[in-house]
Length: 136
Image (cartoon, rainbow, N blue to C red; front, side):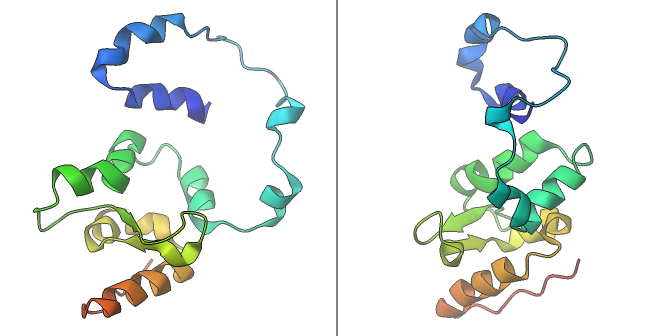
C-alpha cells in the first residue's frame, strides 16, 4: 500500500501514466510470501521506520517526502531549510545528518533515534556548529 501511496509524488507531467496501473479495490486477506517481512526486518529495531508506521495518518507523507530531500535544493537559502544530508554510503548510519529545520518540524518522528542525533552532532561539530538537542 505504501508503494501505491507514492503515486501522489509523481510529477504532474506523469499524470497520464497513472491510468495504466491496475489497482485492486479489494486487498488480499494475507500478505503474499514474497512481501512478508524478513526475519532480519522483524528482529532488528529501526526507530524511525517504527515511528513512521505507528504515527501513520497523523502527518502529511507528501510534505515529509518533500522536506526530507527536495526542500534542501529548492529552498537552501532559507533559514528554515529542512532535510537530510548523506555524507557517505547511504547504508552506513554514520553518513547521515538531519537538518535543524527538519528536527524543528518533524522531531516527533525521531523518538528513539539517539544514534542519528549523535551522528548529526558529529557532522555539525566538524563544521564548528553547536550540537542539537532533541527532546521527544
